[in-house]
Image 1: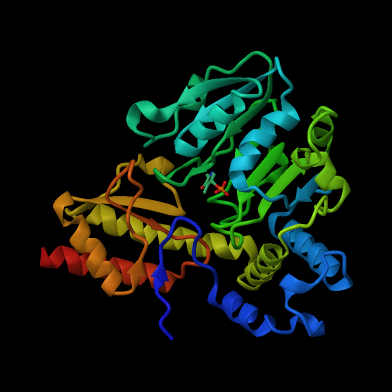
Image 2 (image 1 turned 90 degrees about the horizontal axis):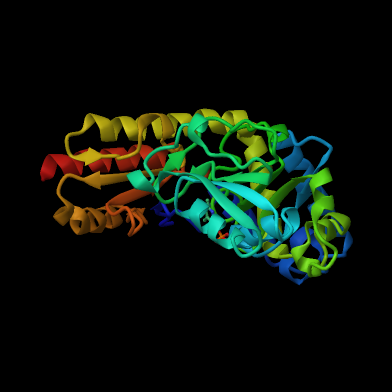
Length: 358
Ligand SMILES: *Cc1c(COP(=O)(O)O)cnc(C)c1O
């Protein structure tokens, strides 16, 4: 078998155990004589899957009872519009903290629906830091505060949860399930699946129940969080295959020791990769040390003319998808939950070897 070490930012690596389970399940899922893609989402087996996945996710993230867990489609990007549609009717104001490209996109989308006020913006230093919370110019009356705990492109991450009294809305696409979080501090959490949850096509949304009531009645059914909450996310046909894989990933996470177990592994993986970068005279990471991402590690080579050689040799060594985002350049290693410590060790060895040979 020739599996590579996949450092893609998304869609990203999935656990091998999960992939093997999928391949066993495909022809005859749970003795239905059909694959999971062919069964009714209203059938007993799928209803059980939906309930089990929610229960496991609630256990993993310790989601309190007064929060709904919803699985819409449309990815994180659709939630960038659904957040203002559901929480901030026209004329109202919402605060946005912009620490990277995704936060900027979220603010841009919100401007179509409400008065989106960018209260802090780290673009002045190319998104390499988190502006001090005391400098944020908060609106006097905001419907919510939106931020991006982990910015996937520049690899900059909040290692604290912002304070204040307005509901916090967090785009956790690239950090969800990488460690425990205190859900109670948030009003809304959303995440596209294709980084740490499963395949693209399903979206995770966690909403405090009182916030479900804020949406106007004239929103389209599928744009209204409340309708997902009232139908167990079966407002229309859900993305059944993606949901099935997410269910397997949640069960896999429980077997790894839950999010405490994952946090320990992820801290170690990120720690050793940053140490290798910092200890070398050849690689560097531009992000301020106290806001470096555990999940996305960008690094640049001292000589950019060697980028292509680095990527070619990495690919030949079975280390794939290391090319950095065009806005940052250089390399980026995304080391989500399913990227093993062995993958990170192999990458570090390769980097050292490459440096010795230049
Ligand atoms: C990948 C990503 C997105 C985009 O997700 P889609 O599911 O493709 O819409 C948004 N925000 C963050 C932080 C991301 O990492």
